[in-house]
Image (cartoon, rainbow over all chains, first blue to last red; front, side):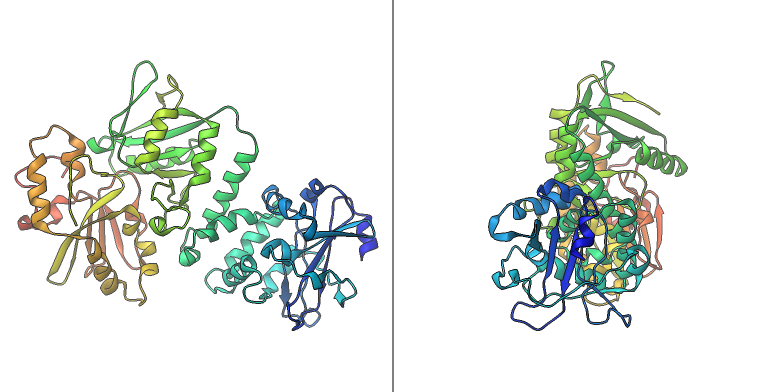
Length: 344
Length: 141
């Protein structure tokens, strides 16, 4: 198996130890025939799944996808730690359990342990039949949490479909999932917008890694109702912030959500205005990086002071946010003067 | 709960009138607490109609506090204070009816299963004796 992988540029061999009841449980050894960690960008993603089929029953099984940039960022510091990686036969090796749990099991370095190499050639088809192998309690919290997600009858099929879609696109956005998980709102997974929120957080990561220069357009839909008039466009293209202490609902990046919401409001008998203005992309990145799902936002561990922007209406088109007063004031300080106009 | 209407975050914390049986009360809570799709996640039982009515009591605001506070702003020319502090949400747990006049998000489309949601003015849904904003009137209520 290791020889086979040498022929595959930028790919990774994944090998799995049989599930045993050893002191440290099972582990997965990740190795790849490259010397630069940057080549992990095209490496194989492995997750310790097992299937219910005859062939794979009670064994850990690999499937393949491409590592996304965020996963590389997650692994990079660990891989550069000498105590967490080693070289055998010109292959850079590390432990997948180690990568996720950041705990070094020195005994797992012995490659003479029994290995099994099971390969699923088409993960897209096989994902529907897999079941996550539950790692030893406490050893691998990230995978434990992922296992819990997949075991939820309300979310398992949807999450599998999400992974399936990401694999098709060529990347697994583990960091997006991790961010949601780190918020500590365990039952968010049961809400209708869970998968869409995962997708959006992954997209925001992609936007951030694409560069920090330039400006991003923001939009706000205001109805004729007096307390909707939080912003006013002046003739010189500047904005007047009538109420900088209130929460400010905005559509970001594209007009998609603003157009949708304006149409909805018009259908309800309202008149609307769509205000467009620009903010520096660095501001947009920071806002989205700080944002948390609206569901139980006040209890989210990533929102300790309650000032985080909220990702709202995840099932609607586009990218709407609710910005608490703190961020309303940051918008006021950061937007590009002269960029504001009414665009409907 | 101490209520201050002047410069309150009227688009982040909504005033709601909720009723069930012969009981009713006002509450003030963050927007997300009025998204019906989420109500189950706050409850241990599946009885939304009974459970969430009780849950919202933790945000309960006394009618007289609202009335007295509103009288302090009633001469204001600030529409945000005058109209933002009028209830934006009405919830009838017996009829499984949710009404919203919130301009910022479509809460009326995200009601609990089996509920009816509607975008409409709230003022006329509330009994006269509980209209703490009287004698203030507006076409927006």
